[in-house]
Length: 171
Picture (cartoon, rainbow, N blue to C red):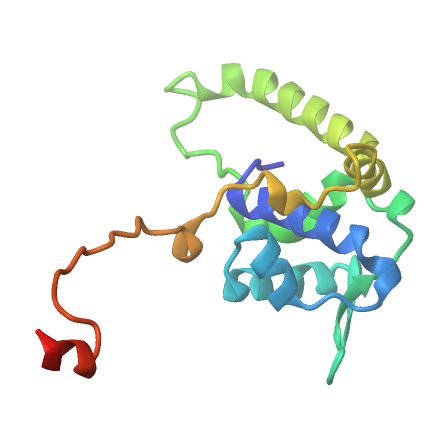
C-alpha cells in the first residue's frame, strides 16, 4: 500500500462526493473547484475508481459521479488500492541479499500489513460522518489552494493619472 498524493486526493474527492451524494451526481468540475484539484487529475483518479467499481458515472447535462456501493462498504484501503496501480509496487532488486535488503523485508512487510489493516478498518461513511459532525462544513473551508489554483499575490498600482476622458480634459 502506498501513501501518495494521488491516494490522498482520491480519499478527499470521495468524501466530498459522499457529502453531496443525496443531491444527485457530483461533477468533477464542482469537486475541482471546492478541493482545488485539477480536473484532469480528478479524471485520472475517477477513471481508476470506476474501473474498480467504487463509483459510477452519469453522462449528459446534470451528470457526474455517484457512489457505486454504500459508503459503509467502501474502505480507505479500497480507494487507495484503486488509484495506486499494481505496477507501482516496490520491486526487489536482483542483488537484494548482498545489500541486506532481504533482512529488512520482514519489517517493511509487517508495517505494510498493519497499515493495510488500519486503512481497511476505516470506512468512507465514518469519514463523511466525521466531517458532518464538524458542523457540516465543506472540506474546502480548510484545504489550501494547490497547483494551478494557488492564488497569486495581488498588487495594486496606485496611479495619479485621470481615470476617464472627461477627467483628462479638465486636467
